[in-house]
Amino acid sequence: MKLISKKFLSKIILGSLITGTFGFASAQKIDAKSKTILDAVTSNYNSKDNTYFKFTFGSGTNGQVSKTETGIFYAAGPKYKLKIMETEQIFDGNKIYNINVEDQEVTVAKPNGTDVMFSPINYLTTYRKDYNVTYYGKKTVNGVQTDFIKLTPVKSNGLKYVYLFVDSAKKQMVKLEQHGSNKDVSVIAIKEYKENQPLSSDMFVFDKSKYKNFLVTEL
Image: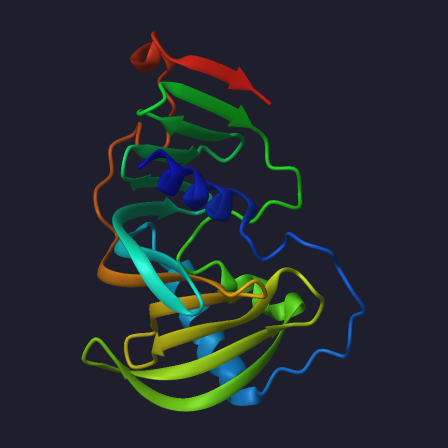
């Protein structure tokens, strides 16, 4: 269980998409249909006071998912809270708090400008400068008719490609697949979505008093 959570955290903190050796950059290509779809989804999410996702995260090798876990994700503006397994991550707008209940450890760090904040929708912003974008038509995902969009890195970044599946009618992300150059695969499938919920005032606050017996490390 520890191995899964650490592997997962390495993906969500560093984003996977920015690690690796950067190579030669070719001219970026974004087709108009994909841009229209992705920009509409971005505008929809940005118009909400807050959003909630319940999702499954799957990981594996050779294109096959072998392990899955369920997580939940809250976001309001730049702030967010993620929970999956025995791990919780909070971004209060200033610092990222990674809470590992299994190891009784908390690490605290400020984003350094190269980190990608975890979100089931972070590719909606990063595609604009980091990826070539191609529309691949319609595909049914979990009973939902989606638009299938492929992202290919402009620079070498450890990824071979990313698949996005979008419900254009609702302007919502349904699923994303991240395929690594090393044949690793990571999949996030959104199972439940809610917006503009009443959230407690401390939703995105790290309360140190709750973790008196934890080892807290500031990076």
